[in-house]
Image (cartoon, rainbow, N blue to C red; front, side, top):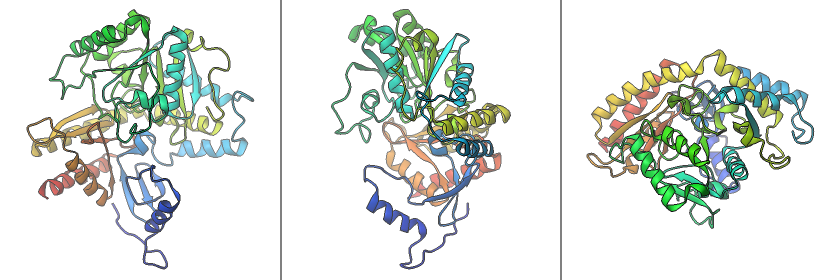
Length: 440
């Protein structure tokens, strides 16, 4: 990647340094930044900062720009919609694109049953509404979630989220009737069979909550911020079956895993799991804010008119972007593209793991991949090494993200339109970064 930069007139600062000075004076300290370089423009799998430095993007805005930066269909759709109208509020003066997005969601999400959808602004808002819908439909209060889960930063979704720092620390009290049970985490639970891990979680639910009190079981099919944890085969199907038997709503949080990211439209489909409700956001709209809850018609339609909605939910510009993104995914077969990313990256990551004992696990599906770093020969997390490797990658012009309850996991989320050559270049940087960081 290019590392050229231009110096701002006066003071010897670069444009990014000038912007960072302004940011420090104007933006709340509570909003963090991974980089101090400021983006100017992007295309496909790269972006260029205001200093003229080109970056290779292995983060996609946290799985948002799956169709690439400035995706042509999205750009044209957004431009055309803005020229027509930007907002009316669907609840006041409706428009076709909202309906069309719901039709697409009803068709694409798992299951052939009759479905309905509702559109919102963010993933956290979608999760909150899914819980509202489940509680209204069942008349029950309790929501079951899992260790290492991440569901958002609002009051309810902070309660649903497992990790304290930085998401929950000193922000309580939180919403009640949320119960946490163990997640299938093969690296850390001794490789329990999925059915055994599910039985342990179910036993805890039945003893501590009571099946008849459970409104919803809420789970990420592959955990995101919690560390890209892929549950053992059989875990999700067993939980889904139990929820059905118990009369609870099984909610799949596919906000990070959805829309081709794992090599299928939705991660649940890898084990033929059909959720009652599914939440989506991130990759749905090519970079614009849009989220949704889609589910069984009898559940979604149980809520009274006016019980769901929001001023900006299903904004027409975001809906136009979503329709263009879905068209791109279909026309360019981005499910196959995600599988290709996996076929290129996983062998290289395994070779890397064989050379570096701190890499305890290589995991994920499609273009949602991760490596976990622990002190060699132990399960003790090594977040310091993760931070050092990330810094070396950033210095070399590759944007990578860390995650995990312990801050010791690298997650790789390249745009699905990335080329093999760009993947190879990024992997070369990662390889060199590990060598550099472990030599210190």
